[in-house]
Each structure stands twice: as C-alpha cells, then as structure tokens.
Amino acid sequence: MIKINFAVLTFVYLLLSILPQKLQAQKIDTGQLLNHVKILAADSLEGRRTCAPGAAKARNYILNHFKSVGLIPFFENYQQKFVVDERGVKCDSAVNLIGSIEGTATKNKSIVISAHYDHEGIQNGKIFNGADDNASGVAAMLEIGRYFAKNQPKHDLIFCAFDAEELGLLGSKSFVKILPDIKNSILLDINIDMIGVSLRNELYIAGAYHSPFLKRQVNPIVNSQDQLKVLWGHDTPELGSQDWTLASDHAAFHRAKIPFLYFGVEDHAHHNQSTDTFENLNHRFFVQAAQFILTTLIHLDAQLASNKNYQTK
Image (cartoon, rainbow, N blue to C red; front, top):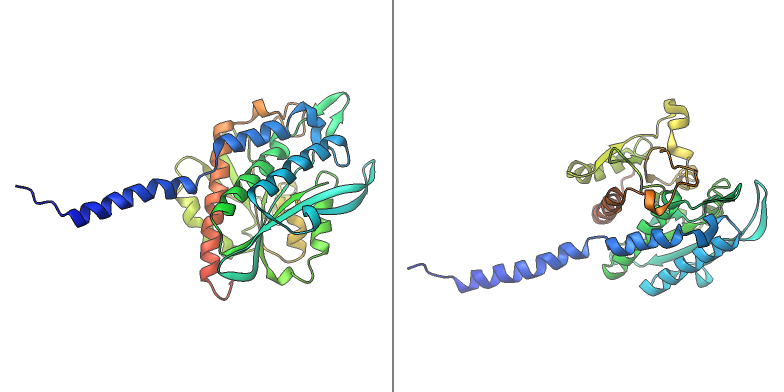
C-alpha cells in the first residue's frame, strides 16, 4: 500500500494553485496591448501630429489610462506643457504626460520608462497612422504601467509619454531640462520606440555599449529567450547612421549622463509610410517583444535594488 503524506500533498496543492497566478501576473495583457495600438493608430487620430487635434485625442486616451490604473501625477494633471517652433509647427500646446509609481525598497531611486506618442500626421492627403512608430511603444508602456500598478516595484518608476519626438526629440529634451534636482536619482531610461514589425523576429537592445553593466544584468533574460531573437547593438560610433544612440528620446537622457536601454526594430517597409497601420503589425512578434521588455524590467528592478552601490560601470 502506498502511504500518502498529506502534509506534502497540501504543500504541492498550494504551490500549484499559487504558481499560475504568479505567472499570469507577470504577463502582458495581450488584448489590452493590441487594443491600445488599434485606438492610437486609428484614422480618427489623423497621425497624432504634435499640436494637432489627433494628438490631443491620443493624449486624452493615455491620460485616462494613467488615471484608471492609478499612476501618481508627476506634474499637475500629469501634464508638462512646452513650446514648439520646429519644422513648420508652432504652438504652445505640446504636452508630455508623466505619471509615476512609488517603489517599496529604494526610495529616491527611479527608473524611467518612456515612449513618444506623436507621429507625422497627414501628408499629401494620406494619414500616417504610426502604428509601429510609435503606438506600439506607447501600448507597451501603458501595459507595463498596468502591471506595476498591481505589482509594486522596488524602485520608483516614472512613465513618460513624450510629445514632439518626430520634431527633434523636443518632449524628452523638455523633460530632462527639469531634472537637475533629481537627475542623480534616476538610474536609467528604458525607451521603447518601434517594437511591432520584424519579419525576422528580431528585437534590438541599444545602450549597453555606453553602460556595460546593463548588459551583464540583462543577459540572463536575453539568453533565456526561445521565441524572440534578441540582439545587442546599434550603439557604437563606427556604425554611423545605424548608431541609434541619439535616434530617439533616450538621447536626452544619454546626454545628461543617465544610462539607457533602447528597445526597437530595424527600419522596415512601413516605417514613416502611410502603410504603418495596425493591420501591418506583426502581432505575435509585437506581443512577445512587449512581454520581453516587461520581463527585463522586472529583472532589472530586482537586480539593481539588490546592488546597494548601484554599480553603473
């Protein structure tokens, strides 16, 4: 007769009942993720050009999401307004949206998660919807915010939806200008810009050339991938135009000597075209990329919190 150890059975039962919930809690909500892009890249938003009505619609959508998940306003009503006079756009109604989540273990140490929500608007009668550039990055940022609102991080997290990136990274530059008093508390910027289209299933991470400690921290997650092909690179000077160090909003942080990791894909046929639509995203790749970024951030939050000296070399 087989003897049953009821104490062991009870432990196993409890473990199995908790484990799926734990794993599920660490997953991106696929339906919400795709819906964000579908809404932000809809024709009704007319390409989200800075200071145009479509950008205001995108801003209201992001603002409502920040409020609904409980992000703390970084500015009054989350909004940092700034003036634009670039490339034919003149207005004083460009707006960054900034929300935050308080950490549990490392007060006054922050990680920024950024993505720009503006795009090219309407050109020659065609709407440049910008599904990949950069509704995809904003969608990932929003779902990462939802996750950490329910699963409090160790570090303070600052979520930045930047405006006017297409006009010269103006939103991120405006934000970094106000950082002198808190710059030393920001450990790094995680910037997400174009993660929705890759026929080769390739997601790049740039920034480790400038901050090698980040590669050491993240490599265990990279090496565990069996679906995505995650590649380091596009961040060395000899690459010329293929050096992405200054290619998106992480550039403002880099110039302020704040480490960054930039997640993105190489250029594709839909980039800066009217064909950059929700339908032309590689949906499976996009979901996997967003999940990988969340997993990376969970890992970094834990690893950096355990390093009391915050080694950044």
